[in-house]
Image 1 (tube, rainbow, N blue to C red):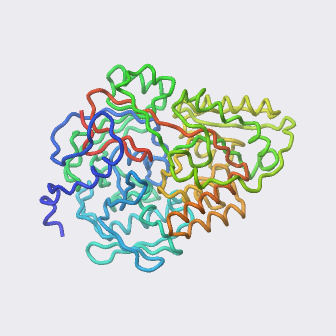
Image 2: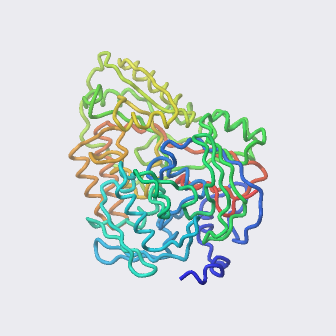
Image 3: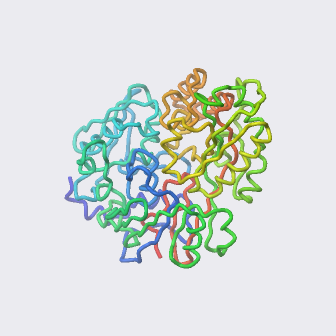
Length: 501
């Protein structure tokens, strides 16, 4: 099966660069001619240090995909549709079965990407605890069929399975990634992307080298020196002084300090929301949730906090989800607001996205004006996530990319707002919400699925467990010498085969 790998590697079918090229690129074309070279290493700063030892099953999955380490069977194109990645094609075989035909590809540890390896990797993801957000409400099994086909069966019909498999949390890794046991997954040297992790220094930095046998052609940069810098001002300063080539998530307050040529702002599907703990504490009371929602004046966030690098809140889905506005309906089932009467609120947020503490401070002031007593906690994200998912805060300010996990608008609702959701910081468990989301999950027709997603959004907003505040634009700092940075509205990719300096 692998006798043609060299000739195919040099062929003009360079799909991954083409997918990346569908997004805007900063500083030049990201066409990635596949010829490669011994280009300079890229110096990149990411805002979020690894929180889970670079496990692909949680928040760290996007670190791996943004650095070009991991890939799934599919990818997202610029229109939010499933595009080929490790699978070159697929077809549906009945309501519950899909067959994916693999391309000729190699793991970074030298093994072949076989149907058996892919099936094993997906099985590991389904067994992970907690389950990856992309698998919220989904049960699947994967089996090898012949030399090139993986057959995936779902317990219930899943009309968007190819879209779901594009999730960074369902990246395909070799069997060696799982050898340590105890549920530990080691992506270092065991993935399939154009850059190979060779060293990870805790939550401080990582070293990546170009993977010369990448199926999509050699990357033009010879490697990446990545730094994890939670402080946004420090990221901007390092870019300005020439220590970095690329800095993600430049703070709004620092944008004006960068030369206009070195900053790119991109509309994304990210929404900043106030999540209210609906299962315990102050906001278990729906009337107090309604009072909190009524106390929040969302008009101040886009212009005052984000200085124009954002859009006013519209709902769970923002204006970057272009079809949503015409389908949005009023919230359903809201409770009548009660007087706060000095009820205490433990509010938390994180500082990896530097605007969030300011957003939370404004929220605190507005809640206090309404009669709540508020304590604000701000930490680095990795030190907050576990407590947030365990429901230890009454309220949480979160910046969430609504299409990050699967690209499917229904999946984020299932993962974030249903009883069994794996990322349910709001701790919401509502029978009507679960029913509305379940109805949306089973719809195959795109337009009807969108309608059902908006109906479910109306139910969720009606609980007041989530108060959308603002829809963000992300600022990326790019040195003048750098070309081909991928400005991805889904925030899954940042560097590709054509990124170079």
